[in-house]
Length: 273
Length: 92
Image (cartoon, rainbow over all chains, first blue to last red; front, side, top):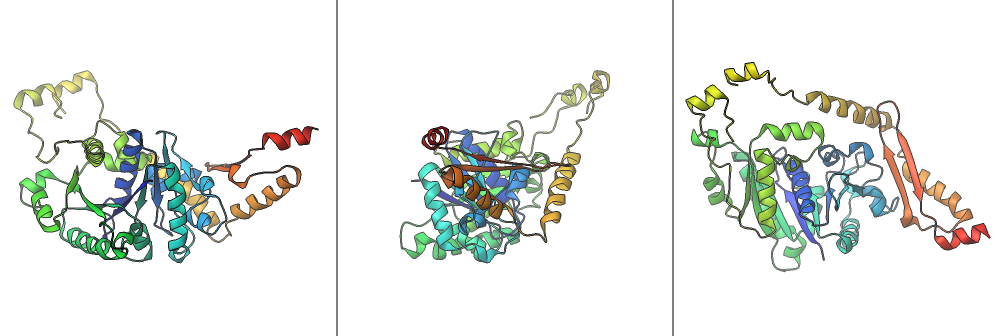
């Protein structure tokens, strides 16, 4: 039976799709068969971040409406074995998604995959509610910024009341905090909420902290999930988060500002990490 | 950048924004072109399957439709897996 994970945040633009792409790719890299579903019907973007936009033929709405088979709509990633993408529809409206339709897709995927990642749209409307409804676990993507923290708290409440697990009074959805766009330099200057503050307010277990990094934009320019850039701090932070998700102990990195280069390093171009 | 890198002749690494622009231009050209038109792929697939099914038994699950959108040209490839048995029948 596959684990269903929703990547959600309430607020838009905090890094849900970037995180979904990175996380799904990371799970597949670790040998887990993973399917990542874009729930943002009408405004799909996961295909672009994963670099498969030119290969989209059918989408989740075609499957729900019986116009295509599920395996025809799945796009197999060419970089990582065992990774598939189910795109959202670009032309239909959100009402085309139904609970029964999504359930049938998740049940069919469950037979073949270890993990099903649901990339939620922003907001708490139908698309977002359907993305989280079947979740066993939730990755709540949050920026160290007031509106993002508030919206994350709101979505945590929705997870606790409107998910299938909540409705059936089962063990609640397991929640994980993924703090993204974290800038240790600004935290040190006391301009930005620090990790401890966000943890204190949201009070859910921490999965990882992704540092603000130039490589994230570079990765989306090219359509490569940033985790494939194993040199970059963001890529490494995502790899750590995936490892923790799978039960490994990994110390948190990138929480402190990078050390200033010494005089000799500056002079001779010694590369700081 | 240290002064030594001047002698090493190491140039600053170029960004990849141009790649982002290229990808966007291609995908947006396709999306704009199909915005008003009906999504014909599901019907195209059904009709093709119906034609193929007149000659051989096909499993709708074993049909792969692949599309690769290019700048000047796109390719649509439809793969139909024929069951070994019906191929033998067809040959007979």
